[in-house]
Image 1 (cartoon, rainbow, N blue to C red):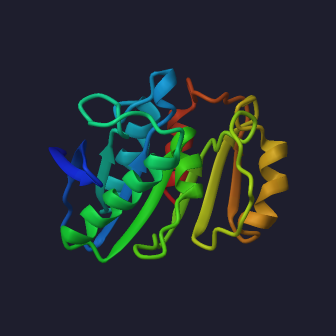
Image 2 (cartoon, one colour):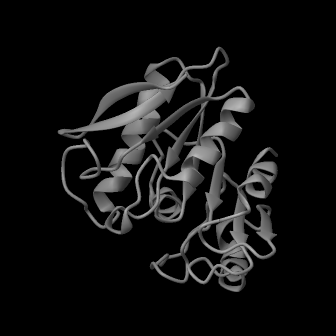
Length: 198
């Protein structure tokens, strides 16, 4: 069961939902774009959380700065990277030994740009990285990237553009395209969950 929690990102108090499992694996799940209504209660975020809970992970989803009851203001992905690092640190403080990162849309973009040298994630999953909408330059290797998922009808995360980036991100990452799904996975959430259960 998820508990409402708060943690500090620099001087901003952020709100989150944390579910502690008995194992030593945990995941931080990040949400879509705040300026377009994205928050930690997004149904794709909830689907990602469900999958990780089934796999025995502790889960932490949170609202980026300026979203919901999280303090601060939207920072175009820069301050949000600090939020991600703070969330990973929260997991480690709770006894988690392996922390993964999973993000949907804007959340995947922030995760990909976050320098986590001090608190490196073990594995990263991107759901619909918005390569057709947001600037992923400069491209750089993401050794921990294990899985990318998008829909064949997703014009915000077009599969063709993602394929061009995978050799730079991590050529060994698995890429799954859900036929018929758009950016919002309406009618395809079960298929998405089945892929995330890797």
